[in-house]
Amino acid sequence: MNYFEMFGLEETFSVDLKQLAERFQAIQKSVHPDRFAHASSQEQLLAVKKSTAVNDAYQTLKNPIKRAEYILSLRGVEIPSEQVTFSDNMFLMRQMELREMLAEIKFADDVDAAVFEVNQVLEIEFEQLFKAMQVSLHENSDNSNKSACESLRKLKFYQKLHLELDRLEDLLFDD
Image (cartoon, rainbow, N blue to C red; front, side, top):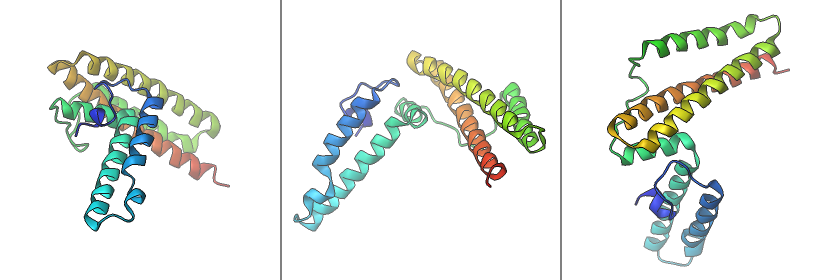
Protein backbone atom coordinates (compact mmCIF):
# COMPACT_ATOMS: atom_id res chain seq x y z
CA MET A 1 0.00 0.00 0.00
CA ASN A 2 1.11 3.52 -0.76
CA TYR A 3 2.44 5.14 2.44
CA PHE A 4 0.58 8.38 1.82
CA GLU A 5 -2.70 6.49 1.37
CA MET A 6 -1.99 4.51 4.54
CA PHE A 7 -2.07 7.75 6.52
CA GLY A 8 -4.75 9.45 4.43
CA LEU A 9 -2.35 12.11 3.20
CA GLU A 10 -1.96 13.81 -0.14
CA GLU A 11 0.99 12.48 -2.12
CA THR A 12 3.17 15.55 -1.81
CA PHE A 13 6.56 16.40 -0.37
CA SER A 14 5.12 18.90 2.11
CA VAL A 15 3.74 16.84 4.97
CA ASP A 16 2.18 18.11 8.18
CA LEU A 17 4.37 16.18 10.63
CA LYS A 18 1.98 16.71 13.53
CA GLN A 19 -0.89 15.28 11.51
CA LEU A 20 1.33 12.40 10.36
CA ALA A 21 2.30 11.59 13.96
CA GLU A 22 -1.33 11.69 15.13
CA ARG A 23 -2.46 9.36 12.35
CA PHE A 24 0.50 7.08 12.98
CA GLN A 25 -0.44 6.74 16.65
CA ALA A 26 -4.09 6.05 15.83
CA ILE A 27 -3.25 3.39 13.23
CA GLN A 28 -0.53 1.85 15.37
CA LYS A 29 -2.99 1.45 18.27
CA SER A 30 -5.36 -0.49 16.05
CA VAL A 31 -2.73 -2.86 14.62
CA HIS A 32 -0.33 -3.16 17.55
CA PRO A 33 0.56 -6.82 18.26
CA ASP A 34 -0.35 -6.44 21.96
CA ARG A 35 -4.00 -6.13 20.92
CA PHE A 36 -3.75 -9.61 19.42
CA ALA A 37 -2.08 -11.36 22.35
CA HIS A 38 -5.00 -13.80 22.70
CA ALA A 39 -5.60 -14.24 18.97
CA SER A 40 -4.44 -17.11 16.81
CA SER A 41 -0.77 -17.31 15.86
CA GLN A 42 -1.69 -16.40 12.28
CA GLU A 43 -3.52 -13.25 13.46
CA GLN A 44 -0.57 -12.38 15.72
CA LEU A 45 1.84 -12.74 12.81
CA LEU A 46 -0.39 -10.59 10.62
CA ALA A 47 -0.53 -7.93 13.37
CA VAL A 48 3.28 -7.90 13.59
CA LYS A 49 3.53 -7.49 9.81
CA LYS A 50 0.97 -4.67 9.77
CA SER A 51 2.67 -2.93 12.69
CA THR A 52 6.04 -3.19 10.96
CA ALA A 53 4.59 -1.80 7.72
CA VAL A 54 3.02 1.13 9.57
CA ASN A 55 6.33 1.85 11.36
CA ASP A 56 8.27 1.68 8.08
CA ALA A 57 5.79 4.00 6.39
CA TYR A 58 5.95 6.47 9.26
CA GLN A 59 9.77 6.49 9.40
CA THR A 60 9.88 7.09 5.64
CA LEU A 61 7.36 9.92 5.56
CA LYS A 62 8.65 11.77 8.61
CA ASN A 63 12.21 11.96 7.22
CA PRO A 64 12.44 14.48 4.35
CA ILE A 65 15.25 12.65 2.53
CA LYS A 66 13.53 9.27 2.77
CA ARG A 67 10.22 10.91 1.81
CA ALA A 68 11.78 12.42 -1.32
CA GLU A 69 13.28 9.04 -2.24
CA TYR A 70 9.92 7.38 -1.74
CA ILE A 71 8.09 9.96 -3.86
CA LEU A 72 10.63 9.53 -6.65
CA SER A 73 10.26 5.74 -6.45
CA LEU A 74 6.46 6.13 -6.74
CA ARG A 75 7.09 8.18 -9.88
CA GLY A 76 9.24 5.42 -11.31
CA VAL A 77 12.52 7.31 -10.97
CA GLU A 78 15.43 4.97 -10.39
CA ILE A 79 17.85 6.46 -7.89
CA PRO A 80 21.43 5.44 -8.69
CA SER A 81 23.39 3.78 -5.92
CA GLU A 82 25.73 5.94 -3.88
CA GLN A 83 28.71 4.30 -5.59
CA VAL A 84 27.74 5.76 -8.97
CA THR A 85 29.87 8.84 -9.49
CA PHE A 86 28.44 12.25 -10.25
CA SER A 87 28.76 13.65 -13.72
CA ASP A 88 28.62 17.18 -12.26
CA ASN A 89 32.29 18.21 -12.24
CA MET A 90 31.57 21.35 -10.22
CA PHE A 91 30.02 19.24 -7.49
CA LEU A 92 32.92 16.81 -7.57
CA MET A 93 35.31 19.71 -7.04
CA ARG A 94 33.13 21.02 -4.21
CA GLN A 95 33.21 17.58 -2.56
CA MET A 96 36.99 17.68 -2.57
CA GLU A 97 37.05 21.22 -1.14
CA LEU A 98 34.65 20.27 1.65
CA ARG A 99 36.65 17.17 2.52
CA GLU A 100 39.79 19.32 2.70
CA MET A 101 37.98 21.74 5.03
CA LEU A 102 37.09 18.81 7.28
CA ALA A 103 40.63 17.48 7.26
CA GLU A 104 42.08 20.89 8.16
CA ILE A 105 39.94 21.29 11.29
CA LYS A 106 42.40 19.21 13.35
CA PHE A 107 45.19 21.64 12.55
CA ALA A 108 43.27 24.87 13.09
CA ASP A 109 44.49 27.37 15.68
CA ASP A 110 40.91 27.73 16.90
CA VAL A 111 39.25 24.32 16.51
CA ASP A 112 35.89 25.59 17.82
CA ALA A 113 35.78 28.30 15.18
CA ALA A 114 36.84 25.87 12.45
CA VAL A 115 34.11 23.39 13.39
CA PHE A 116 31.56 26.21 13.50
CA GLU A 117 32.64 27.50 10.09
CA VAL A 118 32.48 24.08 8.41
CA ASN A 119 29.11 23.43 10.04
CA GLN A 120 27.77 26.73 8.72
CA VAL A 121 29.01 26.00 5.19
CA LEU A 122 27.46 22.52 5.24
CA GLU A 123 24.13 23.80 6.55
CA ILE A 124 23.88 26.64 4.02
CA GLU A 125 24.74 24.43 1.06
CA PHE A 126 22.46 21.64 2.29
CA GLU A 127 19.57 24.09 2.61
CA GLN A 128 20.12 25.44 -0.92
CA LEU A 129 20.08 21.93 -2.38
CA PHE A 130 17.09 20.98 -0.25
CA LYS A 131 15.07 23.92 -1.58
CA ALA A 132 16.06 23.09 -5.16
CA MET A 133 14.95 19.49 -4.60
CA GLN A 134 11.60 20.64 -3.20
CA VAL A 135 10.96 22.82 -6.24
CA SER A 136 11.87 19.97 -8.58
CA LEU A 137 9.64 17.50 -6.73
CA HIS A 138 6.76 19.96 -6.87
CA GLU A 139 7.11 20.41 -10.65
CA ASN A 140 6.86 16.62 -11.21
CA SER A 141 8.03 16.34 -14.81
CA ASP A 142 10.58 13.88 -16.19
CA ASN A 143 13.31 16.53 -16.15
CA SER A 144 12.40 17.93 -12.74
CA ASN A 145 12.26 14.42 -11.24
CA LYS A 146 15.74 13.71 -12.61
CA SER A 147 16.89 17.01 -11.15
CA ALA A 148 15.31 16.14 -7.79
CA CYS A 149 17.10 12.80 -7.91
CA GLU A 150 20.47 14.50 -8.46
CA SER A 151 19.78 16.96 -5.65
CA LEU A 152 18.79 14.08 -3.40
CA ARG A 153 22.06 12.27 -4.10
CA LYS A 154 23.99 15.44 -3.30
CA LEU A 155 22.00 15.94 -0.10
CA LYS A 156 23.03 12.47 1.03
CA PHE A 157 26.64 13.47 0.49
CA TYR A 158 26.12 16.51 2.73
CA GLN A 159 24.49 14.30 5.37
CA LYS A 160 27.57 12.07 5.36
CA LEU A 161 29.82 15.10 5.73
CA HIS A 162 27.75 16.28 8.66
CA LEU A 163 28.15 12.87 10.31
CA GLU A 164 31.89 13.01 9.71
CA LEU A 165 32.00 16.48 11.24
CA ASP A 166 30.05 15.21 14.27
CA ARG A 167 32.47 12.29 14.70
CA LEU A 168 35.46 14.58 14.35
CA GLU A 169 33.97 16.98 16.87
CA ASP A 170 33.44 14.09 19.31
CA LEU A 171 37.06 13.01 18.88
CA LEU A 172 38.47 16.51 19.31
CA PHE A 173 36.33 17.50 22.29
CA ASP A 174 36.03 14.13 24.05
CA ASP A 175 37.59 15.06 27.37
